[in-house]
Length: 299
Image (cartoon, rainbow, N blue to C red; front, side):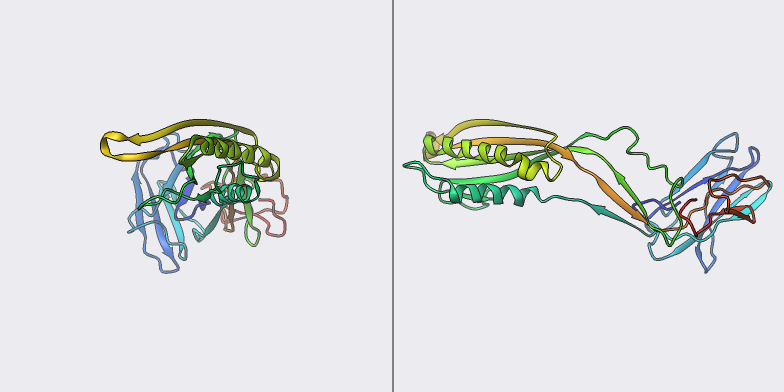
């Protein structure tokens, strides 16, 4: 089977329980075998064996534009797989939270009625590398992304069972929940201005929990924390200093990944004749390799 992230092929197989086995790989159609494993069966009973080929014996991972075949040899004989090409696609459903938060906060600052003595602030993505912006200003920083949980069974797509052959495309979504923590810092020259912008940030966050965060699947759990402080170093001549606060915004929501694959699968290879029973009665057996009927996406 071809792994969803590409560059590797996983081989599940059954062999004789005694003697030595050899597993080989070759590009196709120019046959030139590389030995991946030789020795006793990986399982002393001969069944339920698994080998992960990450490009063993090659300069790097398996090439996405090359077809490969595998040959398995044991004391009863040998068998060769159909060609496989490690081509797949993985899409990250990423949300640009940095830009969303900057847009929400700057928009709120642009329209809010400022109390006397409070000047409009500028929202930026990170602290300036040289010098400071005119105060007040607000800095948005993605402080921490943390996996909250992966529901039971979501990390097990059962590769090879339920996946379909070309021309059909397999779609597998792994559901997960992630916690996003943002630190939004306010820098001001007076404590009243600092407190005003601290409260505005929290209000903007709360007001958009439904309109933005819930609509994007990220309002399962939410919380905030705020700490205020001042920075002044009289003994170093750093005067007059400034007032600041850090608001920690935390929200937990869905953090899924979706994988798309389109490749051939071998359901089972066996050295002995047997009767195969699958959900699709039109599946046929050819040279001991189960070939699913391509007319219906049911392996």
